[in-house]
Image 1 (cartoon, helix red, strand yellow):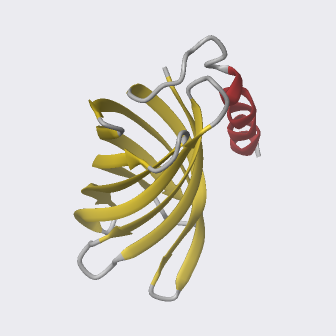
Image 2 (cartoon, helix red, strand yellow; image 1 turned 60 degrees about the vertical axis):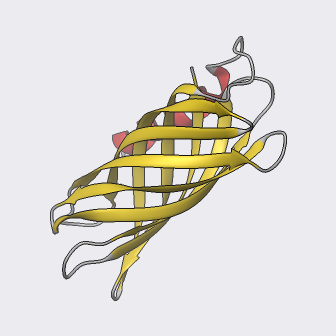
Length: 154
């Protein structure tokens, strides 16, 4: 129960963090995320965190790197770590789409992952919300996940 309270407090506090920041299109960022993961005949909730850095390539395009940790909220599961690269472009004044790929380290084994996502910036600060689909290719245990997140650029 304490973990849920801490997670809720972080979610509520995060949007207030970049009040003085300008509209961010690159730089360091941090994100809290949650959603659902499924494989074969199992579907479970998932929660995680990510930290990364996006490089503004100009012409509304960015390239980024991210490290993340996610926990499938079921018995006998462990935190899965991932290293991810992402490439995206603006589709509106506040919205961007991105493709990503990288490598995931799980208790079932390690393997590559690919995904697609959308990021929408809120207000004039660095706060954003996101949605992402990811597929992890691990021998004998492929996993899919859909997550939503809230994050901020610093």
